[in-house]
Length: 245
Image (cartoon, rainbow, N blue to C red; front, side, top):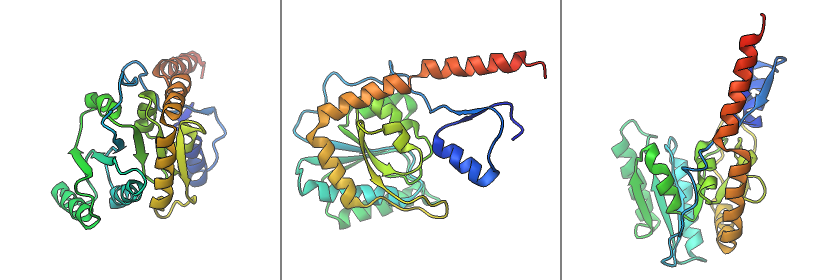
């Protein structure tokens, strides 16, 4: 309320701020996290060994995020036997990452998915584009994610998204760049997306992959490119500096 101007990362962020801080009356707008659409661009060729590579990436702060992905893969493989799950990023739901990794590995074995899940661990920002280009579909299981840059980076690489349709992610993906699984609006606890519904969405996207991939790239370029984002910040900063107040 003391700021001269507020950028919300999504309409969901604005809703949350209004709910917990009270509605803002001053200048404000939604400006989504951007992506460098030159650095993040589609691969010339997708993996072509007959498999469908589903990627779960980011810092995994809750076990449900990886558990739901493994459960989803198990259901997907009943219909797409060549499907694989690649999990990249840090596992940080336990104080020691090695304990979180051990828990995940044990769960993968209990589900009989040890031959179909690849764990690639932490990655540097400079490696993100290459990681995304090696996948067919991004699986984003986080509940109420406000505005994940990972999602727009995937879209810029022509990778459609299957996701928990909560938080700000539906605003990013829209109607054509992926498929979301509905969830309730709840600020008290997480509601993991249903693995069966995620599996249905993965199979549906895989069946129309070129169409979804084109739509994802087009949406990222049209709505989330970094240059207009920087230009809008510059415009607002210039106006504020000229304000006689």
